[in-house]
Amino acid sequence: MSGNGFTTCLWFDGNAEAAADYYLSVFKDGKRGRIGRYNEAGPGPAGSVMVVEFEINGQKFVGLNGGPQFHFSEAISFQIHCADEAESDYYYDALTKDGGEESACGWVKDRFGLSWQVIPPGAIDLVTDPDPERAARATAAMMKMKKLDVAEMRRAADAA
Image 1 (cartoon, rainbow, N blue to C red):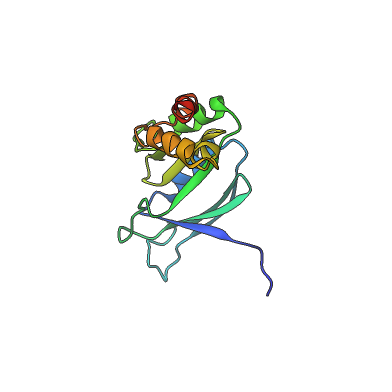
Image 2: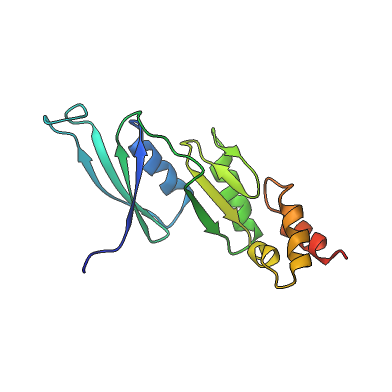
């Protein structure tokens, strides 16, 4: 088999170009690719944007203006493994502003309804600690949080 890897297709209802612009503003190392337009064969209005290609963090995406039939759900989310707390704060704040919303355990929805997991360094290590009691205490603390607070998770894990 041959190919060029994977491209994640995201279905939008007429706002794929705005979504691509938004993601390119949040993720600074991104770039836009081709824009494809509907032609006379449809199903969208001729000349309107059908697809927008873009890349963020080395991952290829295509935004498809497919219509109102399908919507994002938490069944699919993207994890952002952050280098430090400042980066975690940046992504959490950027993805929840202007119509985004907080969820639980570091999960957020952006203004287009796409789910993201903002993961600060050390969080995964705490909830997967080889000591099951430490992991349970860290997980119990995490389950009470919206934005992950690794220092608080660590204090809970260390409490005996």
